[in-house]
Every structure is written in C-alpha cells, then in structure tokens.
Image 1 (cartoon, rainbow, N blue to C red):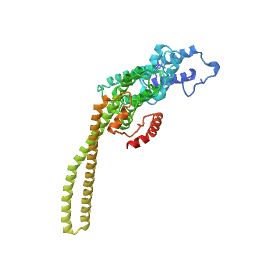
Image 2: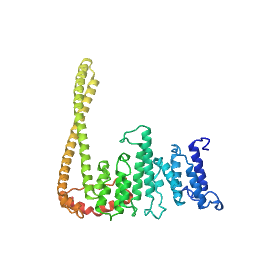
Image 3: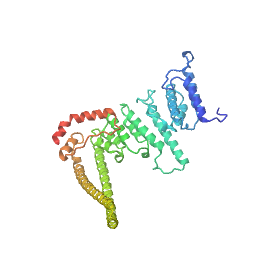
Image 4: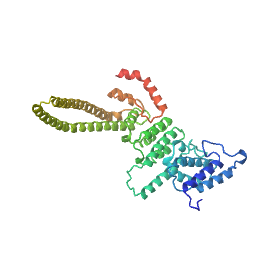
Length: 404
C-alpha cells in the first residue's frame, strides 16, 4: 500500500483495524480480543505485531475527520507498548506522532497508568511531559512554515492543549507521591499564550496544596509563583483571598490585583458616563430645535398630534438625564469604596510583617481592619472543595454574625 502511494489516512485506518483485531487490550471498549482464545498471539508475538504496526504508521497528522478517533487509538497503542515493554525507539516514535495531534486528545487519554516500578506516581507523568514537548516542537515548526513569527499570537491548538493540560494537572495533583519539583516543572511547561485565564491552573495548585500539607513554606511559595494573579477571574480571586492553604505572600498579591481590577473597571465606567454627557447635551439642543420647528409648523397647520409627539420626545430626554444622574451618584459611591479599599490595603502592607506567619494572621487582620470577604468558589473547583468550603462557612457563621 505504501509503495502504491496510497492515501496515508487509508493506511492508518487499515493498521488500526488490524491492531484492534489481533492485539488484545488496545481498545478500552473491548478488552478481550475478537478472535478465539486458542488463536491469541503470545506476548512476544504481540510485541512484534505492535512494533510492526507502529513502524508503518504514517508520520503525517491524521485528517480532521478521523483525528479524534486516531488519537484515542494511538494512546491505546502507547498503553499496550508500555505493558508489552516495547523498544524505546518504538515508544518514542509513537509519542512523537501523538504529540503532533495532542490538541485532539481528551483527559481520559492522558491518564496513562504507570507500569514501571521505577515510577512512584500513579500515572506516567514523564510520558505526558515528553508528548507535550513533542507537541510544542511540532507547533513551532508549523508556525515557522506559515511564517507566523508573532510569539504573542494565540494558537487555537495551543489553547485547547492548555485547557486539557490544566485538567490533567488537577487530576494528578492529588497523588501524594508527586514531588513538588515535578509538579512545578509540569505547571511551567506551557507558554503563557496557552492560557487566557489561570483559573484551571489555580484549581490544580489548590488541589496539590491540599493533598500535600507537609511541604515546606518555600515550596508552597514556589508552586504558587506559577499563578498570574492578573489572569484570575473575580470568582477565583475571591476564593484565593480566603484560601488558608495559600502562602501569605500569594494572598496579598491576589488582594492587590483584585482591587486593581475593580479600580480599572470603575474608572472605565466613569469615562463612559462622562463621554455620554456631551452626547446627551447635543441631543438636547437638537430636540429643542426640533420642538421649536414642530411648534411653528403646528401653529401654521394646526397639527395637534405633532405637538404631542414633540412633548413625548422631551419627556424621554428628561428621563434619560435623570437616569444619568443616578448612574453618576452610584459611580461616586463605588469610587469612595475603592478609596476605602486602597487605605485598608495600604494599612495591611504596613503591619503584615508584624504578624506571625504561622498562625492567627487572618483573624488578626479581620479584628484590626474589619475586612470581610464573601465566600465564593469558582466554577472550575472540584465538588469536594466546594462542599468542604460550604461546611466551613456554615461552621463559622455565628462568628461572622457577631462581627457584623
């Protein structure tokens, strides 16, 4: 088929059908081979068949119509290659082909169990790290071929892999055998352009800190340093501001950028409101001129309906002016609140070094400044975290009522 220059997708489909039929365990939906038990190949025969299939796989990326199915099949081959202890070159070639179409994978595909006694983790994170490296290399080659030299451009495949990898990090973060350095290296393996928001990454960091309470404060700060507080949504900022697992430095940064976002939002609203005033004034003069013209015409032709329409336009304008005044009053109130938050944050920075970092600093801040934050959990958090947060909030409810 290769000598006849047949379509690579057809060759790949034939190899997929052959492998599923004669190599047990490749398809998760059917763990048993389709042939009878008497014709099951031996382990050595299965390894030879597997290596032959992988050696003949086309190097090109699968077509868009079959890429999702083909990617799932390739991950099945990789799992079987690990079980059968296939050659290193065979597995490397397979990982490289998977990396070229990683954006078509699912979270279930990435959860490859660790079959070697040398790996302490539940899942083979080293394998996924290599596949991700191959994906980034192939993406860079594609961008060079397409003459896209802008490093700040957001690639759709890169964004898909970023979201997929954040889910993978959150899944493996609960593994108690996952070392802090390994988790840190995984979190920084993707470029900044892969994430529009860091909520998914924050969830993974939160799960890791929860599952590893014994790590040192320096390791906590290093892991939390991967988060970009400016890329957290308001829900994630609100949750992080109360997260007792985060280091104090990270909480202060979250509070600062949360206040900065609020200030910019209010400033933008005020600018929009100020820009609307000249427009309203222009509309006013235009309406008055139209009213005078209509009144003159009404006196000439005696049109009572035209006068009534002019009166309605004037009432609409007066209503708009009143709504604009109410809006400006609301903006002034919000601006006052922002100034109060700025003073509170400044006071917090001055006394934060005087508070013991290991205990009681949150209660001390609350008693000293009266700062209270509404508990919210961003949608990306797992259910167990949400339930625990709700239980803690219910347990401390009388204390908050007493403060209020």
